[in-house]
Length: 140
Image (cartoon, rainbow, N blue to C red):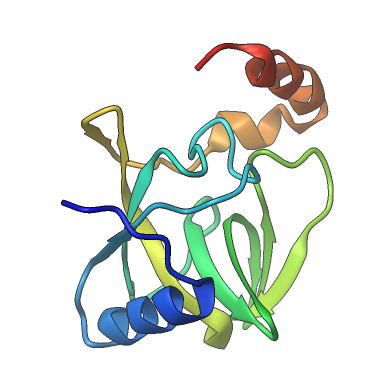
């Protein structure tokens, strides 16, 4: 399969349309905000539109002018709070209507893994700075 780089606006709009039809989509996200669990430019995420969003899910959202792939840290009614696993602070807010899909699998090094809810990683948030500093220095 050939790899092509497509603008987020084009790729993710098409992905959202497919997920709204009940189809699963796969793409390679860019960026480092989901390290160490999703490596931008290397890992492939498989996504689907699920009936509900839960704490611990990794979701793709659309906000004005940007798309974000982060983990849900709180759901309060229609409000969703997200934070990237590779971030040491800072969150985003959205509504359930902004959610395009949920990661159902991650393909890493030829293996398919389930994303999990990140319970341990969320609990050690104060230590992330140190763990991520070491991780980013490893030759992966």
